[in-house]
Image 1: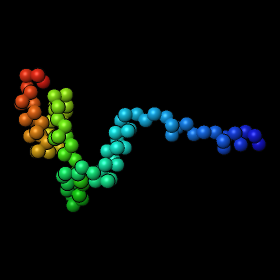
Image 2: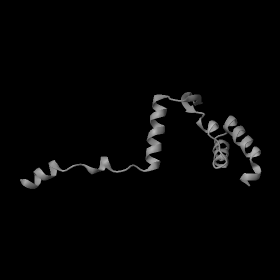
Image 3: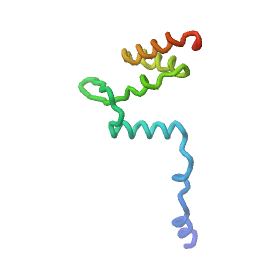
Image 4: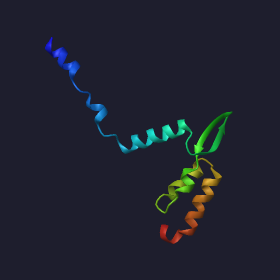
Length: 96
């Protein structure tokens, strides 16, 4: 009987464990999406509307412009593609 009571009184340490950065970012982005915070564009796919963020355009840097370019190219996002190409052009010497 005592062992049953010990199990009931044990503290659940999983909720106190540190969260991985990827998990933390994913949850934060999901919550921003659900709250429609910072949504400045809406993608429409087969009649469904998806509010999204133009966050990438405002945060292009030399460190991420190639990755953002690849993302924009893969999704045919013309505005983001143009912004990434512009940043690459301005900083081509440093980036290459």
